[in-house]
Length: 188
Image (cartoon, rainbow, N blue to C red; front, side):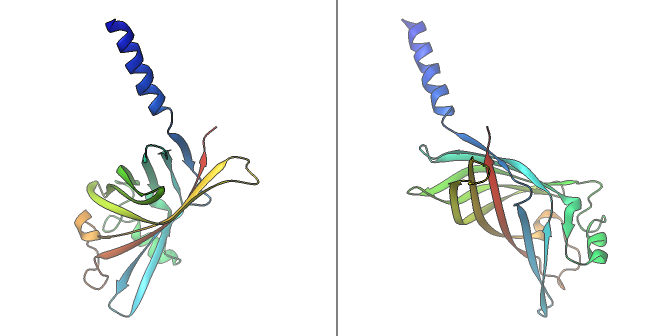
């Protein structure tokens, strides 16, 4: 009797876990970008050109997970001199910290709509909570790939100084705004 109960519990647990679909981040359609005020004169913007990771999504259970890895060396301000400086030890220190990561703790839904993700950002070896607001989220059967593709527009704000990135404050504001365009392709 106990054995049958154990088998039933295992089947129920694994069938629930099997409902989550896995999506692989499409690096050719995913570019985290950021901006910070420069002395009230202008807003400097940059982006990262190389992002990988996975998204797990169980729409029925309204749960999932994000595991994102950003190549810190792929930073791009549109000005090579600034890119080269940003990679140095006094800014992103890419030799010591080659990756920026984001790992979710929970996904929040409003009905069937994904609205936010609570997670942890690791930058310069420091991990802090950062909540992503999901401004837009949509999944479609991609006409060319013949697989489901989900895309989102996400945003967040944090203080870079909380992560030890204090270069040129206060000339460059410590407050950073993120804007993340992301697409992910359902795994086969």
